[in-house]
Structure formats: C-alpha cells, structure tokens
Length: 295
Picture 1 (cartoon, one colour):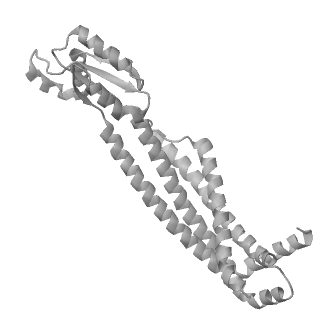
Picture 2 (tube, helix red, strand yellow):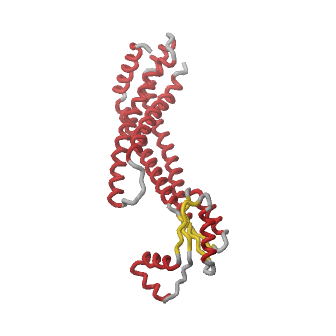
Picture 3 (cartoon, helix red, strand yellow):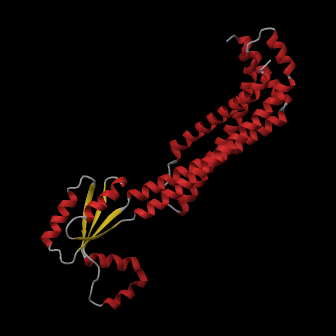
C-alpha cells in the first residue's frame, strides 16, 4: 500500500470523526459500557467456576462401616479401597474420634450430646480422597459395594448445585453479552452510515471513475476500528480497576475465597476486550457500507 494512500485514509478518518464527533462519542461510550459489562460477567463467571472447581476438589467420601465388622475385615476393606486407581488417600476414623469431631463442630451446643451418656451411636468410617473430582461418583459406588460398608456419603450435591448456578450465570451472561454486542454494532453502524450517506454522491463518482470497493471501504473501516479501539481501551482500563478493587475487598473480608490471580488473568482480559472492540468496530462499518456500495 502506497504512503499517499495511507495518508488519504488517515485524513478521511480524521475529517469524518470531526464532522460526526457527537455520534462518535456515543459510539465510543456504547462500546465502552457494553464491553465493561461483558468483561464484568466474564470475570465473575471465571471466578465462580474456579470456586466450584476448588470446592469439588475438596470433596471427600465418607464410608461408614458395619459395627459387626472385625479389625481384620476393616483392614481388608482399607486395602481394597487403597488399591482403587482413583483413590489418592484413605484415613480411618474410629467412632471415638468421630464423636470428638462432632463435639468440636457443635461448639457451645455440644452439651446436647450429654443425653447419650457413655454410648456412642456414631459408626467407624473411612475418609476417602480421590485424585480427580470426576471420579467421586464412581468411586463412591465402588466403595459402597464393598463388604462391611454400611453407607457412603459425599458432598457432591453441593458442588452440583454450585455448577448449576455457574451454568445459569454463564448462559445469562452470554445472552446479555450478545445483546450488548448487537446494540454496539447497531450504534457504530449508524455512526458510519451517517458518514457514508453524506458522501454517497462522492462514493458513486469514485466508483464510476474506477475506484475499487476496498479503496472506498478502508477509511470507513478504519474509522470503525478507531471507535472500537478507543471504547475497548476505556473499558479495559475500567475493568483493571474494578478487578483490583474486587480482589482487595475479597482479601479483606473473605481471605479464604478462591479467586483467579490478578496477573496474568487481567492482562488476557484487557487484550481480549480491546480486540473485541476493534472487531465490533469493523463489523459495524461493514454492515453500514453494504447498501451504499451497490452502485
């Protein structure tokens, strides 16, 4: 591409931006707000997914044993569980220790256990940890089939409900982001359409004298790219500040809460938002040019 051609494109973009500055500001603002909301939803969904994965990885299987099971039988059950490929560790929890754990969890309300006297209704149990969260269900079923295992319980329902919520947020966020993207493309395409309409006669003359479609298109596409880039950059800066403030708030109130580290995650989000802004600008320009290029 010749230098003179590049200068012509840049000059046309500047003239068009000055001529339609208010619509340009509206386009930039729409892109910035839309991409900011899009980025916020992406950040929240990503962190909720991490939280769900973290909770699922901590799920343990509790295998309660029959009281009639002998020590030899218990050792045999423990050996069979350890031999399972999906199991990473097995811990034996006698009923006495289980009662102590229950008392600690009850705290000041542990006095309600005094009614039991010297009896201990809790069973002996194994606490089983699996290598992968996806192995919990099948491992629990395999352990439940072992001789001497009375009952098997695990917190899969909590994680499943959490993933259902994450899925709902992801779907809702996707639909909202799609709506905002369409609205942004509409605003930008109307901004470019005003410029194209004002220069429709000039475009027709350029086509008649032999100017190619791409020669005519490039100034408008560059204008759309510029509007999208500025809007995306503003949104990216706002998202960086938002995520930094969010992490600071979580660190001061919910330090145990699993979150995605600020770096390099926010850098990826920044690049993605700016690229999305440029793409939306190009798409909006292309949509607005389609009708007027048919001469």
